[in-house]
Length: 294
Length: 327
Image (cartoon, rainbow over all chains, first blue to last red; front, side, top):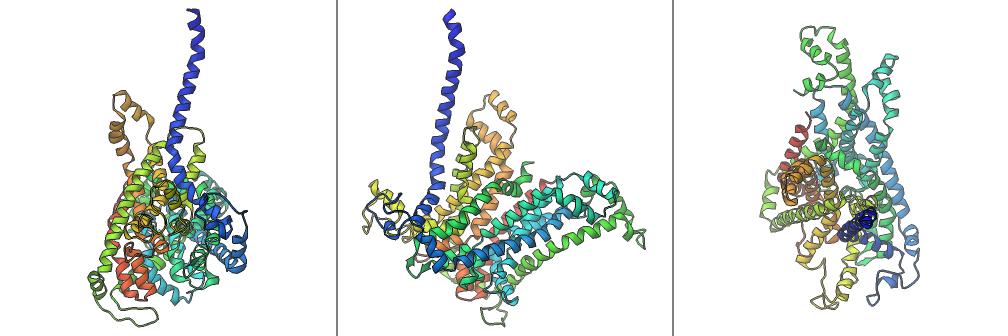
């Protein structure tokens, strides 16, 4: 009798723990293929980027690790033998201007749709968002004409002009949702204190909305980095290309692939974008589906 | 409708002002706070609306015009040719191959993404240690810029130094290099179509999983518990509780994914550019190669517009879902 009474309090946690361990093992086993599938290509690209050329083309040894010392040569090649430096500068400049245009248009629009109780606001908001769904593949040919009319062909400015067609609809929608969460009272208080409607927006609403604004900037950047078609269709001059296009087109000469540099150039920009996007992924998902959960 | 709904909440003044607007229009209506608010609001909206109208709306209409003209790169004057471009496309067997491949690609990849995404979502909603890290790693394919990851796959599908083939040959699943049992992923018609679909699945399955998770976590656990108490099996709970409750979000997620899959050219363009011998040609690559590479803008526009009948039902359904959820 006594032994049982003593044993129970000890045994109970142990079985709990065994259960929890078993559950964890099962979950990890289930996740393993997914993790491998998701991560292996990145790992492989990284290893390739750091391998010496002869090390890439050996099928007799396990290819997953280095058989010659790792090297920075592929990165060196990018910066000294290609226009990679230009591509990075172009990408940054495009990101800057697209973010600026997006903020200047989507912030007021999102605010107006969310807060000013305009007639047809809801329909207008949905209308703007729907243009996000008109894909580039339908627009790129007429836009090619627009771009050449504006004399922007073969210049990264053409991408500054067209990327807001992706980012404005998305960010207006996102910011509309965001502004709906800012309490009306702070605006009313500002107006009681003598601010006009515009003053209330600029001095009170915007300063408390910076998380929304940062999110909009991040999406202006990451969504324009996902594009390949517009860059491919509008820019064919080497020093005007953004990174994804430059890497994909200039590091393949005829049948010769500079695999090491290709992977190096792709990762150098891809990884930071992926990290930033990762941090804001939930906002993206709730941006496009959010209301459905409500 | 929407006007009353929009004004009905915090501002009882709005509808009333509109109602009397007709009567006292002369001077006073434009001075009312409501009128000023409208003016202010539409001014704020104007830049975004104009930008989108100018660079999405007008180009869209312009693409309809291109499609019925013989416009080509470098020739400024275009003639109206009626439905000639569409006729030419419909009579071209390459077009039909592209239509078939587009449908196979979109449906096949969609089903795979749905299955993998569901399995992953069920694993990821379980509470376990390291969940956030696992989630962050698993979504990498979706967050990498698409051109970047496709280049990685191109290297993995290399005809000779493919790491996939290395692993398979070590496992004795395939023959030696050069033998017919050595798969050339991007060089053999059936394998090439499979490979481009696989990359699309690889990129899209985390998105499906995250969307499904968002849907699942929005189900109150009490409802599932109630199902358990009432003796519903896992499959019954899945079919009768989880699926109906996440259906709207599932639909929105897959509609978005389908729109992006249908219109994405980069995977096929970078991996095979439609080859070998048209085996992976899809409408986006055909439109690009016709419109930009061959310079036949009119023909290209007709081909890319032929995606529209596939996109339109999705867009209408999305529109209806987005509107229905409002009030």
